[in-house]
Amino acid sequence: MHGSDATGSPYAPHTETEQSRMLETIGAESIDDLFDIPDAVGFDGTFGIDARSERETRRLVRSILRRNDDLTELLGRGHYGYYVPSLVDHLADRSEFLTSYTQYQPEVSQGFLQALFEYQSLLVELTGLDVANCSMYDAATALGEAATLAERVRTTSGHRVLVPDRLLEGRRSTLENYVAGTDLAIEEYPTDDGNADLAALEEAVGEDVVMVYAENPTVRGTIEEGLASIGEFAAENDALFVLGSDPIALSVLQRPADVGADVVVGDASVLGLPTSYGMGLGLFACREDYLRQVPGRLVGASEDATDRRAFTLTLQTREQHIRRERATSNICTNQAWVALRTAMHAASLGPDGLVDLANRGVTRAQNLAARVDDLEGVDAPVHDRHHLREFVARVDRPARAVADDLEDRGFAVHVVGEDEIQLCVAGVSDERLDAFVAALEEVVR
Image (cartoon, rainbow, N blue to C red; front, side, top):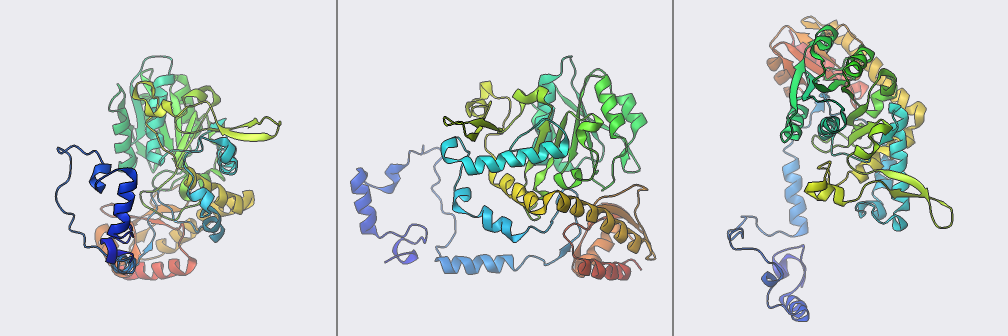
């Protein structure tokens, strides 16, 4: 007798006799004796969840998922659904990867450690910086870690962190959470036509600034043209210049090291993961000067007892992250499996394929902007800039009404102003873009 017929749970398929034998073997009278939960925090109610067999559970989950809207997403703004080659799933789903925890024991983790080393090497090559870790939770936590690192390494006193006024709300709130226990204060600098207002930023940067943050591409898809100037403003005031980007964008844009960036953060899961809205992979790379301040894990190359090349976690111990009084970071777990997927996707593309993917993001966004600009009642792109993946369009009708009508026709877009919508081409087929233009023509009249 197995499954729900035996115990009411398909996940503990044991009869009462089998349970009694196991309890007798370990010297316990009941299952409750195996847990020491104080009465004050013990749950004595019911969850109201009926017991179901595996088949019934699958049927229920499928019925819930069918309630999701089947929309073509042109959303972007930090979440990009690039096609992930099937080989990534097949390789990453091998049991030695799925069941691996943090690779503390190098003697049994060489394959995984080497893959993570290759992931770090990829980021080092794309950023031009000396060190990359593996890895952070997402772009927002990487930004928070960069701010606390800046406070630790800056040689003079200061407390201001400057961020663009269009910083995504989720990244801004995470950053504020990170600095809540410090003396750091988050302040905004203005943007002009989508990019940093360099004159205003130069005036805002002073000796009391510990970090200046910019993004390339920006949240509105524009290519930031003043990165070298931003780097100079930061260097002149001994502030860290932190740049937000991602591996696809970095394959065609200026290397961060070449414009004076000290730290690069962002979301590396643009490779290896489909659009997941909450699950990510934080990119974190920096200059060698900050090597011992890097949060998260670092994989290094060494030699074993027989002089063969070997890989191991290096420079940091687990206690650095789990002992509050010694911690320099609150990152206590890792995104190693996601980093593995990113490395696999990048390797499958190769250097030329990665550049081609980025260039397609430039040309397809440019072409879509031209097509929607030809429609009566639409002006695109709003910003007179180069764009990658996404752009903002102005519509004559209220943007919310346009977005709602598009949703009725099977398309999801961001509303970013009373008369502005944002469109992203990443992961959308040419056929669906054709259908979108036709739908937009209908709803903007």
